[in-house]
Length: 277
Ligand SMILES: C[S@@+](CC[C@H](N)C(=O)[O-])C[C@H]1O[C@@H](n2cnc3c(N)ncnc32)[C@H](O)[C@@H]1O
Image 1: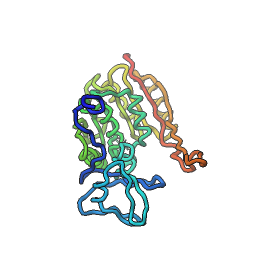
Image 2 (image 1 turned 90 degrees about the vertical axis):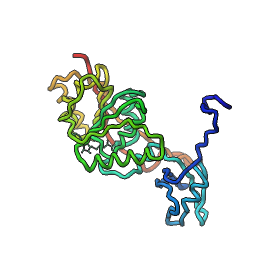
Image 3 (image 1 turned 30 degrees about the horizontal axis):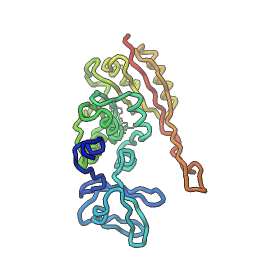
């Protein structure tokens, strides 16, 4: 219907349409995923046969397609989770379940200003950029040029085939030495080994009552972080430390049980909230 939320512009929205240059995710019947971009004249090669990119383009997103030997694949537009899990990396990206929870703990909304360090491979950057939207801003600090380059390329490649958000500023440098405007940030996400070394610089830039979330693989890091906060006397209140436990199931009746292979531990998320003191 014209003018409804389903068709805001009065035009038919076709979500299945794929173009050369777009990202495509092929999924086999066991759930294995293959991420690549469609290129004219190229083929997708699998140990059971190959598929011309042209055939995938004609089939479109949301379709089923078969290899010459009958092996079925479904064709999808990769989600942000797919993209971050399968994109090239220098540093290990924040795991998507944790990146999603970080945007939630920071209570990010369109138009907000958020800072992160380090950029790494740009995984968390993408989640933050999507949460604050085109009217917001992500300041992404990274001390290693090689990592920053990878993050920039991953971001550009993701945006390429989509609307450009234009809301990420990459800064090459150590966050400890950054000159940040006081009370300018709605949130800070730290995915680095020693977050307590940058907190002193970040705390004054954070607006009162807003949060810093640190992503820490080891509980010993969480303990050190909380000790350092206490010792330094920063006006930060420990809100909570949590793990995001994701347990997938294999449901193909009569089979129905948790998957035998699971993602075990990734990291702890520690949320600290800025007080006015
Ligand atoms: C685990 S990676 C971050 C991964 C990133 N969150 C992602 O999703 O791709 C940690 C990064 O922090 C950077 N780093 C460590 N200490 C830093 C500091 N003081 N200032 C800026 N970057 C820092 C490292 O060089 C590394 O690239």
